[in-house]
Image (cartoon, rainbow, N blue to C red; front, side):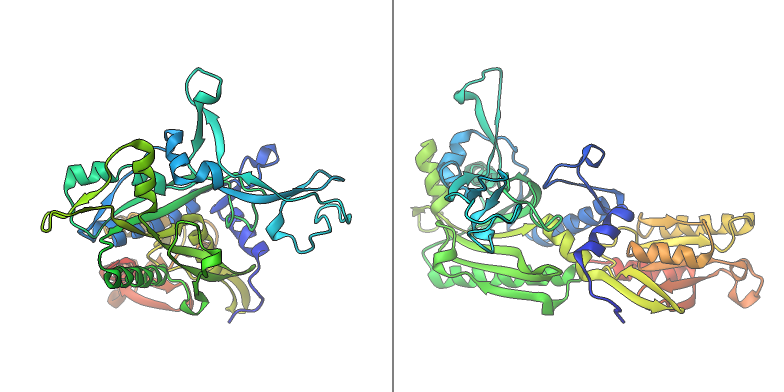
Length: 449
């Protein structure tokens, strides 16, 4: 049973202490809106990415993966409207010179930093794209942007994929990659970042059948929710939000957000937008390329419409960590653990000899670990300290199983020879099983699909 509320302070502390996420450039005082993933964080993030790619690309026949360049011809961002309109309202305090997002202020007349009243200036639009230079020239002709989203690279490659693979509608392009946004006020740990990672799909549909398009849109929402469940997230913390017309992006005919109960409140986790033909039409106009699609059966040409399911990877990592955080009492002690789904847990099992100074136990434990790593490579080793402390360390990083080799494994009790103690993280329950049974449990818990 949980003993105290889950707070962001606890999540941030555990993430750093256990090697999930570190503040960016920490030894130099950090850089706002940037974080570095440590060994366990990289494993968790990669597990989510692998699961996403398998679910939405590898296991489907209508999806095509790409990896577009981060730097693009700036005309691509002009066509998409980012150069002119990718902005947030900014206000500056005349007293402390602090800058803040106008739409996030609780009191429009009071500076949230210095507390002075009447010092906030008029709101002005601040473009969030990072500018840089490409090549040796140092004038406006050399200006390029770090992409603010991965979608642009997929739209400009629409024609390439159609020419190479001749897919039939509906079909989608999928990409996982970095995006960059010069946020005025990055906040809430890895929820709002300046350097982030996205997993996005641009799913192209035939606009001539509106009912079919709406059915495809609804199906993608269901797939998004199913994926969140696959990650182990609590369904009651998910909320479907139909975005009203006045709050939708200018290109969207219909938008549905999935919000999640984070420790700091209910906030957006996933997005789903019906972008119509805005992007392909805009890029066709700017580039002069023909981005229509030929229906081989009817010989009609038209510009496909696009449905965009988008997943913020960093927000998913945060949701998974926050949802899995637990504090309970086990064996008379308060313990902290992460109730991670075995599918995404960085370590699937820990193998440990009961005593590190007994060569025969160590040798047998190494043999067991080697056998278990044929099931999954993420099988850890720990022989430091007493067995209780080893269990607690694994609990904190979300390891679902611990496998202990003792003298019974070696045959001290003949009927228990070649069996091990399998400990379950969430309950602390232990059972005596064969190595083959332990392997089967791990395999079954980690399987996808």
